[in-house]
Amino acid sequence: MFDNIERDALREEGFDPDDPETVTAIDLVRWELSLLRRDPEVEQG
Image (cartoon, rainbow, N blue to C red; front, side):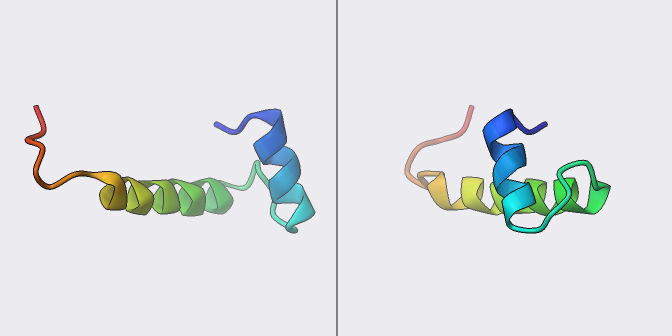
C-alpha cells in the first residue's frame, strides 16, 4: 500500500503504516482529495 518513503514519513509522524486504522485513514484522505481533483465539466466515462 505504501512505498518506503511514505512508510518512513508515517513513522516520523508517529503513525504505524501497518495499522489497519492508519491505512483506512490514508485511503479516506486520498478519496477526499480525488473528489477535489475531478473536473465537473468533464464527463466521467
